Image (tube, rainbow, N blue to C red):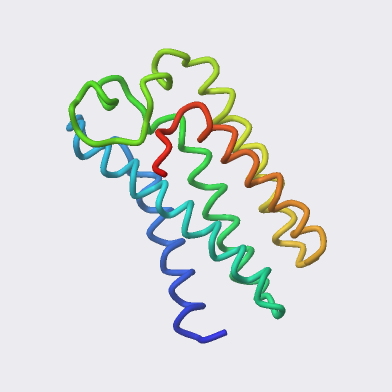
Length: 156
């Protein structure tokens, strides 16, 4: 594992912690939607980093643990990323379906599942137990898919 890649994961985590705590400091729908998109991109990049490490045959547990913590930190803020007026009705391109606002209880339950699974996974990741992490990554991925299937526009 190169030092540059290792450092970049920690840099992303520092940015994530800053951006998560500063989400919704504006009322501009376009800015909120952009920040939401960037946070989801970071979750995706973190999940990819975990999977790449697990597939490498020589996983760097520090990268896995840091990426898992990034996902968990962002997941805990997810429920704040969808204020009224930031959906498809804006005319701004978004992968968020109107169902997010139409089915608040269902969406909140899906978001809560991600918080729960990402918390469990962050604990597993910090253990350094590769076999437990392999099993946990499937549950984490399932929590992501659970929400995507209902509340995200399929981008195929």
